[in-house]
Length: 472
Image (cartoon, rainbow, N blue to C red; front, side):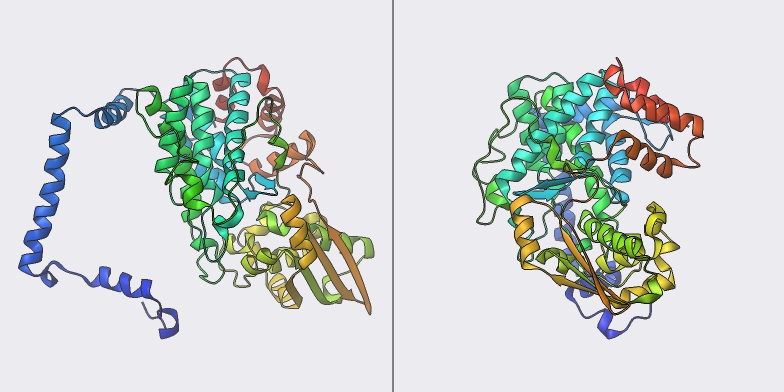
């Protein structure tokens, strides 16, 4: 591999080089002996613990061994068959995250994604246990409310001053575990244990792949979400079998709040009835980071209302909240993920494609369209104090776009994009989204059947009847 010094001048590269170059012959005899001891030591400790039949090891290993005899239990939404519930949650959770087309929490205390984790886990358990649509809906609601409560307690500083902990990993596994626990009809103590297991064992959920300065935009964020969903299933199943955990995983010493809050923690407050916070979860019109949606819509409206063509534009100024101006500033579009997290690309795409915008705008080959990439050069991204204040007050992602053309400045501001609670997507809107996403995968007739069935989910006595429709 031929690379320049500028591309390798960082510590991780040196580590990778070391790993790649290390051979057995490089290791001295004393170290070889010691490493052999370490390996043997770990193995015999494991055997010794098993001999004592300690509960945590027995519960877990019995659980895994049981899977060998469990028939495939939950549908892969890709239609490729069935897998045990936790593995189905893993696969479905990864696929649901990839397009960045998922739900988003819009709350003054925190933002992020929850349904994308909770739902794959809950659906897998509901299918395995033959639960009804009503039971699934109730369980998902419970999981989302708990997860939102956790995020509010933590506050948003887990992603400030260079930190990068994702809400997907901080609260998603707990919400998934709660949803699964409810479907398994666990008692209060078991629910607490499920939450404790999920919280203590949650993946770090770091965000280096989403930092423009790192320039990576890798696939790890997708797998982390699937892993979080799988953990929710495992946590509930293990709690049912007697696995214990701290009941203070959120607010206790060394818990989630203590570990992830940085000066903005608040008490953990639970809903007392109903689902008062579900409206804080928005859906998406565009297959991209929620932080670019308002700017896309604003730019599209300006061009449509004034019949502006891309070649007429002199300059485009996009104003957003302060952290979005930094984290969504990338101009190096080398894969679909970079495009989804780039304000310059998203706005250029919206201007060029207008009402013809689709999910394919953030896929190859569209992301390499030279006209779009050239238009990006005219787009300036700036932080705006008023929009930052609005975000802190509401949790929303507003944007103001100014387009200079024909000697005139055209301005449009969007505070709440389509899909937010202020401008919710209808079933018709969601059906259009579904149709585009599954075109060529399902026949038109099957698309219509699935869409109609989704609206009647609460009437299904067995969720498996609904998920079975996804079989190809």
